[in-house]
Length: 247
Length: 77
Ligand SMILES: NC(=O)c1ccc[n+]([C@@H]2O[C@H](COP(=O)([O-])OP(=O)(O)OC[C@H]3O[C@@H](n4cnc5c(N)ncnc54)[C@H](OP(=O)(O)O)[C@@H]3O)[C@@H](O)[C@H]2O)c1
Image 1 (cartoon, rainbow over the protein chains, first blue to last red):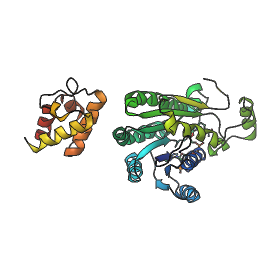
Image 2 (cartoon, rainbow over the protein chains, first blue to last red):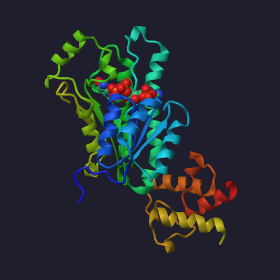
Image 3 (cartoon, each protein chain N blue to C red):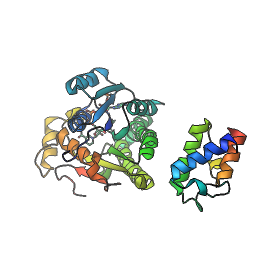
């Protein structure tokens, strides 16, 4: 008998699988039996992860902001059987105070963190609707709910993802497709490596659990939402932040 | 009955899971065949795929019955 959260025979697309959190998400879905489609722009990092995972791992190099990328990624996944799980994890930051923010910093973050996620979700829906099953998981951020100085673009995009997920969830709930968000707090990855030690200490002080998050903390939340067991959970945001914000 | 009509009806039967006998030319997707708004979008997408055409939103809104669909595809397919 299959164990809890079993994903045997399912296909999952993870964007930004070349990054810290995306890599952990891909590993955890794969460990439960899913076939994973690893996407990102850096081929070496994706190939290395695919080699580590062995069977059931496929690399699709793509810049999700490019026109046609979403359709290409979905088509590759559908070739492997059927696209069951989409994890929109690719994301960037271009931090600076609003007064200093360039249009390009604003647009770049909205394009990557919001528009590209919409396109991928839209492209995934067709097959999911037909099969009456699907899981769409959007990686948002604590900052999309609490705000953060220096991140007007990022907070807007991440809050946008939450609204988008709720609207989409309402549209397609009757077809067995769920759309949810996972909102990490501060997780130790390349994205937070930019902080110096003082900033890091100050940050840790604000986390009741007393440590930064690990990519695996986020991956576990994704695995739950990807599972059949979570079929009645939709339009929600699961906060994974060590208690930093209780919302 | 034309080939297009046959194919349209087949799609309707498959997508809405209704009895073939109910899919008459005058049947309304919503009122007679129990389609909801998402069903009608799915039907339009299925027609587009089957007949290799694009049905713009304003035209799709006017496709309310089986006959509307057949007529549209005969004219534009
Ligand atoms: N770390 C945190 O504390 C934290 C907190 C809250 C939320 N998050 C969110 O978690 C997600 C993952 O972040 P991370 O911390 O793992 O950062 P990361 O290590 O920098 O990973 C980001 C990933 O996004 C991919 N990516 C960026 N732009 C892309 C594009 N245009 N096309 C395709 N892939 C693109 C990158 O792949 P390539 O470089 O190969 O293109 C990379 O794999 C992001 O959405 C981030 O906003 C992170």
